Image (cartoon, rainbow, N blue to C red; front, side):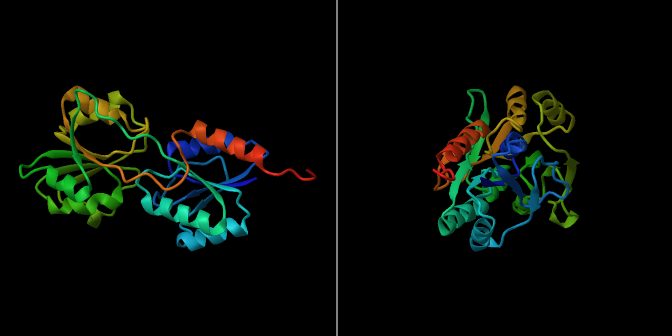
Length: 253
C-alpha cells in the first residue's frame, strides 16, 4: 500500500519510524519546507507544496496513494483543508492526526485570545519582556506593539525585517523539558508567554514552567477541528493504517 504522510510534527515522525521497515507499505513523508534544515526522516521525503488541493489530488492519483495521513500542525489549516479537498477529488482515504489541545490547570494564568492580533493587544500598554513561541509567519502582529522586548524561539532565525522591534532570537529545536524552560524564563526575565494551543507533550514544558513561576500565558485558541476522520495519537493512526491494510482486497481473492 502506498501512503503519504503530511508531516512536520512529532506524531508524523513517530508514524514514519514505525513504517520505515514495514515492507507492506511504501510510505513517503512530505514537509512544507518552512524549516531550512528539517530533522532527518526515516522515509523518503519530499519538500514543498503540491500546488493547492488540485495539485495534491494529482499527486495522489499519479502515485496511486492508498491513504493520506495528515499529521501536520493543528494550526496548519490551509494544508489540512487542501488534504480534505484533495482526498474528495481523488477518492483517497484521509486520516487527520488531531492531537488534543492543552487544558487549563487550576493554577494556570491563561489569557485566551482568538488570534495573533488579539494576542499582541493582550500584552497591554506597559512594556513587558515577552517570550514568543508562535512560529515565524505569525510575527507581523507584534510589530503593532513595539514597546515590548520580545524573545523569539525558532528553529531557523527569521529574516531581520520580519522581527518585531526590540527582538532577540533563540535558535532551538524541541522537545523542551520543563526544567530547561524554567531556566529560560528566569534567565531572560520573561514576564509573559505567548503561545498557540498546539497540544502535545513536546512543548508543554513551557506551560508547566510558567505555572510554577506564576507567569501569565497569552493562549491563542485552536482553529475548529477538521471535517475528516481523526485520531489523537500516532499509535491510533498506526492502528487505523493496519485496519485499512487488512481491509483492502487481496490479489486472487
